[in-house]
Length: 393
Ligand SMILES: Cc1cc2nc3c(=O)[nH]c(=O)nc-3n(C[C@H](O)[C@H](O)[C@H](O)COP(=O)(O)O)c2cc1C
Image (tube, rainbow, N blue to C red):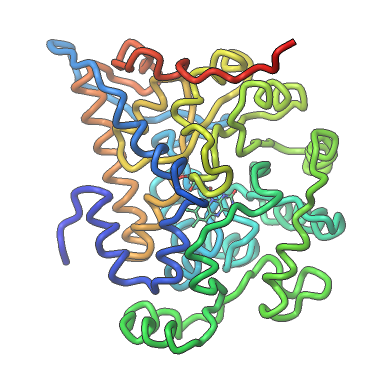
């Protein structure tokens, strides 16, 4: 087995092992993929301030996210179809997160159901909710998440209409994959993936099939999702969901200071500065570039988390230094999962922890809480050189 020293190593194995349809699903952004690319490349624009002769013994990456103790402030982001990247993927990723001491977030569009994950893990996980038109179904999902002991609801706000990813349309993305000559030819080269998949019965959307009215098989599912996401979602509906849930609420997909202020008003416990990994509004600015403005608007009043483009512990450090209390990884853990199952997710987390810890030491810091803008060298105008064009009076 090759030695894993960074996230790219896991990515290389992942690419070889997983069917093209699911690799492309993960590795794409919407339309031109500008935002998808910027999420990563903007991190590289920020540099680090080296400090020396500072006692570096007794360092710690431990922190809390919405009051929950975490081994490092890096949670696993909700990722739909995770159980297609590796058989029983959500269960394996949740186990890895539990072992490592970080939160796992289960997507509404997962393959393993809420109950599947709850039955195979001890640590509470977070449930990510998409708001559907069918209120009864949404209320049921909330009830199921409560019954499973989920200790936070992550409400995603940036996907009421689906951003177009060209490859998904061209590949005919589905779960399980539809057998066409092209998919069969590709699946024949993915023997390890196929063997694991043949041992599980979890191959379609576990939270939905058998729970939502009119959805008994997967063939009707794609049209159902297109029709069912609620285009009328607004702040009053968010308030209703908050009340119905009654627990900790994290609002995901905030990319503008005005929306961050609304999140504060509605009483959320945290927000995630996010553009859905560049999969929704192509042309939006990267999450890391928007973080400072959002921190300035609400940072002293609400916990601010971020995701998008994190591929290393150095990226995590940069986000924390710009004020985020917590971060999430999406693709970085999927690479590990697709490459090596639960072990791969643990390896991804360990790579990031080690990079974060070593970088902290070389920046002269002992604790993640002490990180701040003083650790960074940020290009002039990094956060402020984009003006909104205000309408002339
Ligand atoms: C393949 C894939 C599927 C995703 N599915 C969901 C989802 O079901 N719900 C959700 O809120 N976000 C979803 N996201 C977005 C992630 O939660 C997260 O915002 C994003 O992956 C962060 O960017 P990164 O992948 O660069 O770390 C998905 C992302 C990817 C890559």
